[in-house]
Length: 260
Image (spheres, one colour):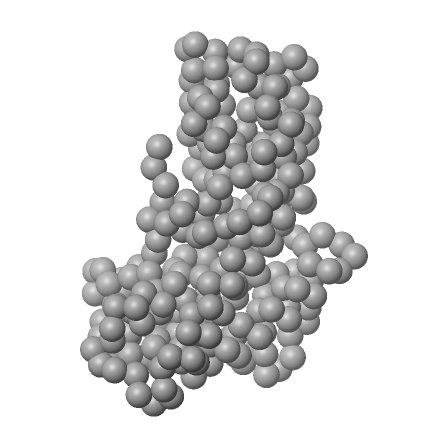
């Protein structure tokens, strides 16, 4: 199934000698779907966890009584993102090829849309805090811990928000909006290169540049992303997912993943 999904995926096969999928694993399923609940009543010798390296984790299981493959999304790690509300709908199909097609066309686009909403919300909340509590041109240096944390959240979320705005099927960008995305993409690429050259973390100059661009144009980026992604989610067709590797945040801002 992983070979039928966009981009590279890490696959972990789990074996259950007692024939039971662990309850703690099912507790991580984002959607409390009745499609999955009967699995605890039947013997099931194994399942698979698929990870794309960008925060998406899928649970693949086989329904014992008819051999249907079931795929559900796992909740994003709290270290990666705080999500609320119902998750993407679990998909089912009789073959690995068919279930991969369902994941590509429905599950992954729904997952992306649902995780981008809290990403956008967190970025907007930080910008609101800056507008209300920090006087323009008076940002203290060295930066206080709460300001550094807000910048890290932005650097973590920005690559995903920009990628969603450029998805096939998203609203065509005006020239000025495209320039906003271009500026932040250039900044993120520069920070990633700087962190690679330094071994880990960002150089002070890189942090200063990121802070300046974020303070100056953060609101403009949010407006572009909101316009592009909301318009595409309300369109008549489902969004398609990119076949490229998921975007990576700069090393200094990378969130830690969930461990089991």
